[in-house]
Figure 1 (cartoon, rainbow, N blue to C red):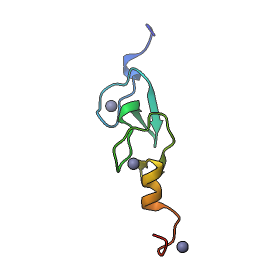
Figure 2: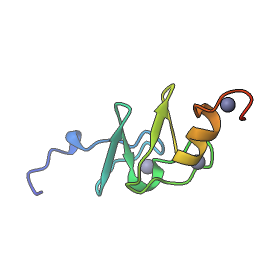
Figure 3: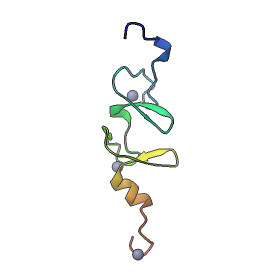
Figure 4: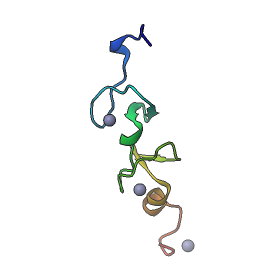
Length: 75
Ligand SMILES: [Zn+2]
Ligand SMILES: [Zn+2]
Ligand SMILES: [Zn+2]
């Protein structure tokens, strides 16, 4: 937008550069779509479902691997 206030441009929490395209807002921060990644495998979610734990985001596989509700014996 021509009237866009430059100070209003959100900053990516991963690379600390302004985000001018698609924005992901998660965990109270803004991210480039390609910089919002699983804390474990570092794959971008690209709009797919993610899981949050202790201020970090995880893909479904790694969230289940790390915090899944399987009991001690099943793990
Ligand atoms: Zn970024
Ligand atoms: Zn992952
Ligand atoms: Zn079990």
